[in-house]
Length: 76
Image (cartoon, rainbow, N blue to C red; front, side, top):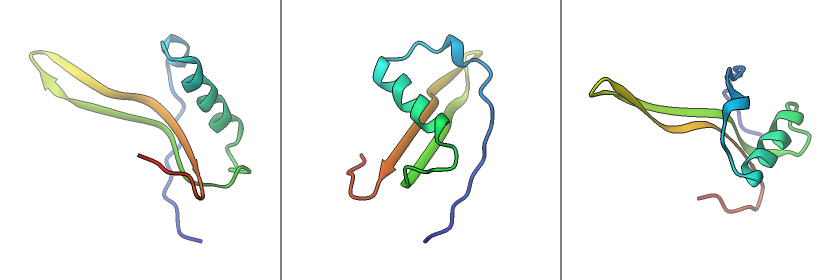
């Protein structure tokens, strides 16, 4: 088994997320399986990507994305 690097943070405004049903379902699966019983080989929890301030505003490109990828699945 390889090593893993983790950072677990509690999102502040999940209730305000406007997300599709399949996205919400994936988030619930990831949150309910914190010990990785599903044996995902790649797991991303609450990934956020914010680009710097431009014209007084920041651009949020990715907002609290959760992904679980199992062995043999194609990701991309």
